[in-house]
Image 1 (cartoon, helix red, strand yellow):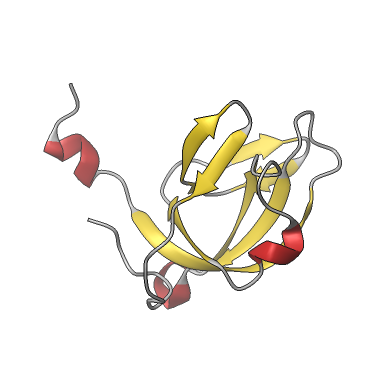
Image 2: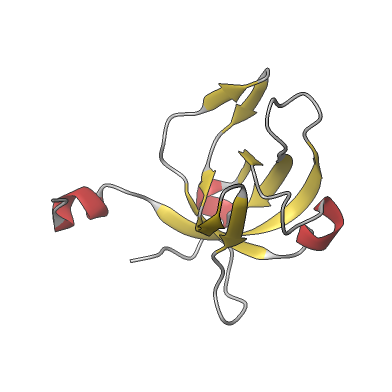
Length: 110
């Protein structure tokens, strides 16, 4: 079982997607995201397998929840710096987590 201390190690923040494009080089369908997490964290990139429900155009301006303190991963030569969170409704079907109201970029999740 995870402990509260395990959870507290995660830095989970709200950010706004400022750029999105199809990730044509990825083996599995994905979208490259640039997300603004505010002054403290800055702008970060992510690769997200969310093409079942979302197009890049639908994502611009949308707020998302992401873990911002995992080590970066290289995916088909692309540096993915944060893990965007979502509910997994089925195989290849992710529903993004987001706040009910617009909040300041970088708002921590606790």
